[in-house]
Length: 423
Length: 141
Image (cartoon, rainbow over all chains, first blue to last red; front, side, top):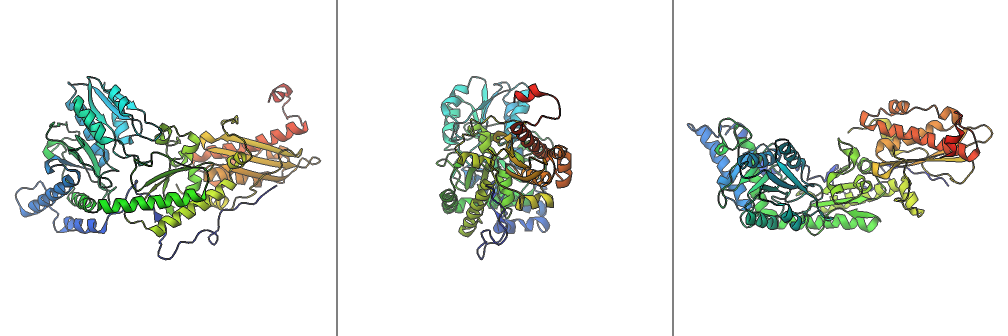
């Protein structure tokens, strides 16, 4: 009756093919490495051209200012904006805060209602929650099983006090792309401002703020092979002219919208990263999608009872989020310690709650605990993806041998019928 | 989070994985936790009817590395003990042995629960009275 299960020893497990360096980084939604071309562009701005972009009276300041303006153009060009519509920030969390709080304060007399979705990033959700304390009303739209918001529900949620809709372009966990062009159109028809958290989408899929009626958009450097600690907020200047109250007061930098000395090297890096994304997106997104599909097929061909979380059709090319039934996510991560991915398991979060994004899709808590997010990026290769697929599959197989749930399911027990002795 | 060497060792080389015949008179089975909570442990003991010594123990666990390690350790510790001795195992001893951080203490609690549930099942099967004279409560299980 008894079987001996051991995790795979170094010799038993799939070996990395020649040329594949371990550990493999497949967590590009968390952050991405800086592209060498980005770093090269940044380097002069630490020591030689270290000036303050706000110094108007000498060449050091002028050089810094010129570099900042070049970056502003590079970013604007990627999203179809004009350079004056780009405000530099410390990152997308600040951009989200500035957009939402800035609009809330500026348009307080017009209304106090904000609409967002339950699967937003915490930088948006917690900002909205804070505004609720100050008398704003917030509607948190549910999402459908595929992770998309329902436009009819959005329409119904709007009223004459609605001043802002903030819905992300691409989700950071499941990579699902919201219909931002339709949302933007709807908002403009109703005279409501539309902010989108574009952190995961900008540079990965085409976005045009004018064609798609986006009024404000948060951008991050380190998700697109730029540096950490720098981001931007797009703020529309025409049709309509969007005004925001600053959340940081001081020297009046960035047209008064964001005071503080500009992070010149970071900004140069963000600009360069946007330029590279614009030039390479078409080719790169095809490559990402093919690597992602390769990963998905190699895993799902070998394992049964795997579940893809979120729409495959409306999805970032580099994202894959899978639940492996009967296997807990953190234990899976432990077994593939030469691969960097992340899990929606409670055990990997500080709150001991499984992913709220997966729960919002109607994924049961059990499957949320079993989920793994793969984030494929610019520097991943086919050989790496194959290796990861094999390591994941063999570890899931081992952990299922160790799982009482898998055993029960194979015996024909319906786990939903079991009366679990909860702690 | 960094795992202690002992957790890693139990995870990589779990002791006593498997299943005993749950229908055997000598076997007690404990199934604790819930899939929704991310932890389910099944711990089984095989008890010598003469000596009441736990001669074999097996486990299967759905859960994080610390949960796997806690239940693996629990099977090691109950083996060779009498059922009454095994009931004395405290979750705090598991925490100490595996150097579990505060967020993982519930894994050790679950392992203690699993030992108790397995012993309870064995006692029920074999008509062994619980140490506390509470026959009514026991019958209601």
